[in-house]
Image 1 (spheres, rainbow, N blue to C red):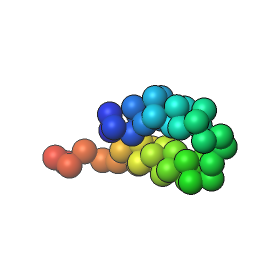
Image 2 (spheres, rainbow, N blue to C red):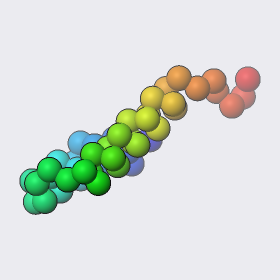
Image 3 (cartoon, rainbow, N blue to C red):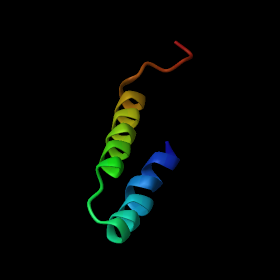
Length: 47
């Protein structure tokens, strides 16, 4: 999940500054938030 967090905190803000508001970046950001949510609410594999 570190990759997704880094993208949200570092990569996307830099791209937004360079590209301006971009619907593709918004979709990627939403996908990462969904991944993080699913990981946080899933049952551990060892159960």
